[in-house]
Image (cartoon, helix red, strand yellow):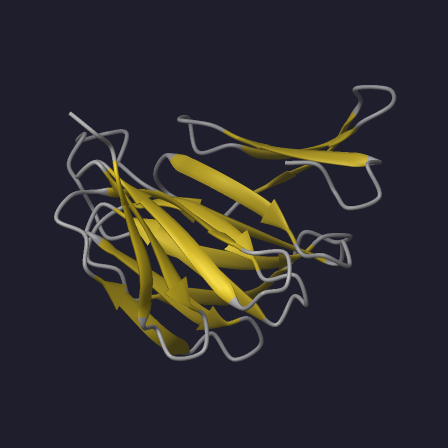
Length: 171
């Protein structure tokens, strides 16, 4: 993921690595530690001040393990908060446009909306019947879309958690 100013890139890896790079020179700026299994996704906050990373499958045992979200200060790399609440690996993470919320998508067939300051769950979005691969906010932050291996994408109201649309892949 690129930082909002385009000057940094954060990458994740199956070997637990989270690396922040200079986007112009390719120089490694820092390696962030804290996850103990495969890191599946990362996102910068809209102001570029924080990085959220999420983990998935345990690389040693290859077993599905509950995922965690680590929120870090983007400059120092220090942990700000760890969010826990999914019962399966987390596949993706995204910040809301205002940076106040985070959404995660998981193999536990849910997406969770988190308060980015407190780390508390705001909403649990349930309705998929397969792994939820990704989640994203609309540009105005009023809706969330999730995509699942069940062949659907669901558009949710980001305040109430109500389903607004179910998009199905035709057969």
